Length: 322
Image (tube, rainbow, N blue to C red; front, side, top):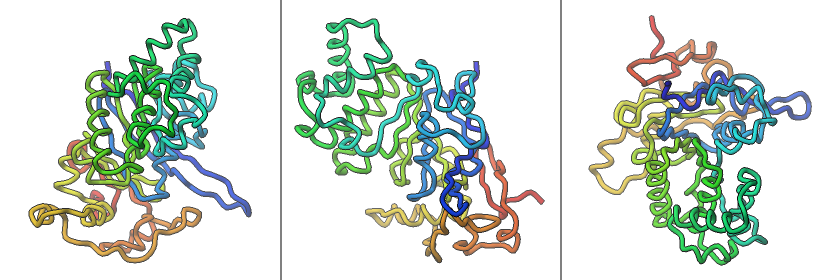
């Protein structure tokens, strides 16, 4: 049996605006995710990270491409997926304050997915399952009768994780799950996510703009820029041998606390120019207007993704085969 749980092939998601303008939010992205693996998807705001997540869970329909999951193409199913497919791919959103209904107790919020996906459960069985979910994420069962407003941000996010686990998923999409939390609380949530992954053999697509977080969490890292993939590699290779100029620029900008950590970073690269509008992406390489290593071909031809070492792929004319 293949280790792949998810394979995205040439995924595109375009949004039509007025005056015949089109936002190419996701523009020909191909990714793979293995069972029990964490793939970190990193990019600046507007790079298309969350759009990919929303297409994967069926909130948006794909414009083009394939989303292969357990033998089926979710892109063809569009918004009309089976209940089983919907249950097996879950998402944890960035802000638990807006993703939890403030008028529902935690018990009622956790019962909603049970009522949809486990209709055969009796009320006592549902109550027992709610307590089981709370214990799984490290929260007291007494929280079941609290409202979200009576809890801290980290506790609310753990409730969101518990809700995602209610349907027994195989794949969980984590859409910047810690960016709204204090640093000390982030560590607690990340630790629990790592523990749950090992216990339940979950696969994670971890979406973030925080590269430093990926060093300790992800098995592999992929970088997005204006809806396109720049580079993807095993985490160790990614941090030790970054290839794409955009990747090196991001890594050189990571804040560090010691001079030893500073020495491990690529040489400082000053960003020039502004990020182009996703409505008017420049021809050729989308990054060429900000790239200090630009070649003449970069403004004319769009580069293709190439594997330069096992598992390490880069989309850049600097590494094109002669």
